[in-house]
Length: 176
Image 1 (tube, rainbow, N blue to C red):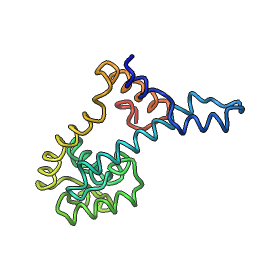
Image 2 (spheres, rainbow, N blue to C red):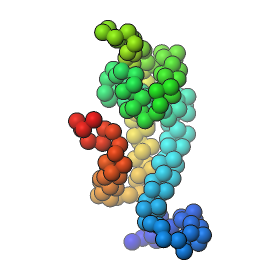
Image 3 (cartoon, rainbow, N blue to C red):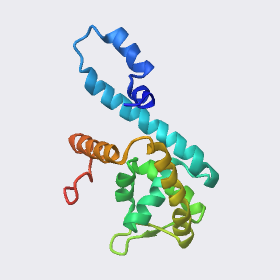
C-alpha cells in the first residue's frame, strides 16, 4: 500500500480523541467508526458538491435532489417526493415552492383527489438538471478518484447493505 493510501486510511484525529477519552468503555468502536466516518464523509462530499457545482445555479442540496428525483422518476405526488428526497413534507413544500417560483417545477392538483398535489419538472427544470448533472457527476468522480474502481464497487455494496440494515425505504425495489 502506498504511503498516501496508508495515510488516507489511518484513523482521523476525532477517532483518536474518542479512543483516548472513551477507550476504557465497553463500546463497539468499529461500528462507531463506520457510522461516524460515513456521516463525516457524506457531509464533506455534500459541502464540496454544493460549493463546486450547485452554488453557481443557486441551488441547495435539497433543491438539486428534488430536480434529480423528478428527472429520474418523473412526476410524483408531493408526499412521495418528500420521502424520495429524504425530507419532511413541510421542508419539501418549501423547496418545491422556491423551485416553482424559479420556473423549474410545476404543481398541479390530482384529478381524482383535489387534496393530492403532483409535482413535475418544467422544460426549464429539465434543461437545468440535464446541464447540471454531468458537472455534478464529474465532481463525484473527482471525490472518489483515489479509490480504485473495484474498491468503489465494494464500498457501494457495503453502503447498500447499511441502507438495508437501517431499514431505509426504497432500498429494495418493490419492498415498499
